[in-house]
Length: 348
Image (cartoon, rainbow, N blue to C red; front, side, top):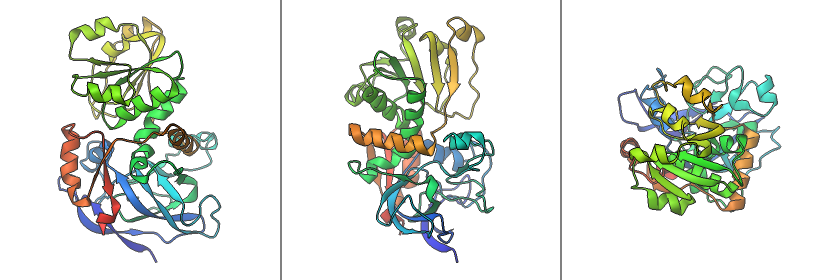
């Protein structure tokens, strides 16, 4: 029989999240039961429950930055043991059979990966996320959180960390490369930390200089305000790679002008509005405008190990469950430095 667990869920796209209970499936032969300790709040949670990315089935418990401890395993599980410190990110299943899945890129499953919440799982149920006390996940989509990273600062790595790590790795951020990060929020602050740890020269591009001190502390070598009309002229042709982390519409063509020959601007923010591009901004310097979505399970584990090696974690503010709705409003007002993390013990 399914197990009922404590959670916070949105009753509709227009109502606040409220305390409730949700059902978790029985632990199957290949499943892991995780007692959630911390769950990060991602801007995607807000977009999803408020219908910005399309209609949802309610009630819906969001949350795809999950850190916890294994409390039960299925009879066939070999990758995890009871007591292990583990994490779950933005997906909990995929077809496992397409060429992308077999290449370890489950996030790009040709048959569609199964999101941690608001998605149709292989058994036909709607997935419910990490704003809850427990979750049951197939072992292949559970990653190990290394010793040396506390669970609270690890939780946001399961989305914000891998979302920025993956394009930095794919486009070769490292020694001798100049990387710009657009936006210093939940994603952006991790992009700065990771790019710096990889050895790149890092510049933050933000609307204003109000977070300049933070940016430099986190590892940026330079910090510019994009509201200053001189910034785009001064930095023209400067960067090998630009990671755009903002979930709002910006003038992409202006930012493409900041790339050097063969440079790439990679979008990891997901605004609801289209991002128009002037073709001449691309062809003038053989520039690329690309996108990137989280990372596969293998790469997510690689990212966690990298963070443990370099002593990296998210900058967080831990909150009780009853402050989730207040936190949503603060995220929308950019009033968080830099990730809210829910203490899952307060769901009970």
